[in-house]
Image (cartoon, rainbow, N blue to C red):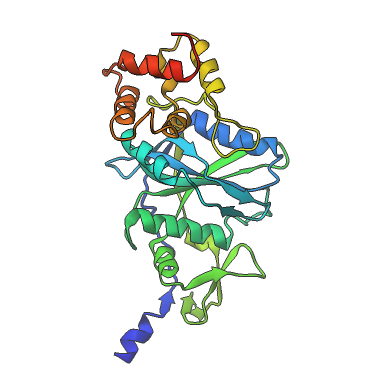
Length: 308
């Protein structure tokens, strides 16, 4: 029994051959908007967002939108703040037939070979654990963005962390190495054996799995309403009025087909009830065969301060 118990604290570090996710298809506008926002800060700080979309039968991921939670960021890390809209975001995704399928993070340029910090590896593992509801296979993905300091071009690359990494994080076996940001430290309670030798730290790259990525334009959602939780970005009825008054040939439903606009409407539960009204509005957004009830179009225009 003692030997069995001891084995639980010993990890033979192995490289995983294949990722669990087969590919990522990223909404072009959402990805571009995220990197452009970082570019406006000169890529001097980190930032994260949650990816919403679908897991497909072939274990690929299709991303339709990005939601950036409240956060405090520096050049070397991020801290998530309490989000009063957390439940709202998940409810809206569900109404649109979506779920959280990954997360995206951006960071300033780093020295060659420094891909993920220990904190980023552990955050990715925790997110995969939550998606898989334990140490199990999941297509849940991590997308890393940074900029080439030479030519200013942005790179957008998807990864996963290995099942072994998930297991070690779940057991509390990994932590940050104060002397090397690109490595994870093995807790003194555990033993890691890598290439036949005891390892007190492991390069974070050892746990990473690369995934192919391609672009698409979401057939469900568009990007034309101000993003939540950004400096200099305000969501208001004035913005809604401006959008509906200058639709550029788009129908009211097409104007409403923005995750952040729908999230804004959900702030006003007395007018847009989450149980009755929002599911009907979302059904019209996600299904082109369903027409938005004229009554809702009038209520939304009135809410925006437009003459009806």
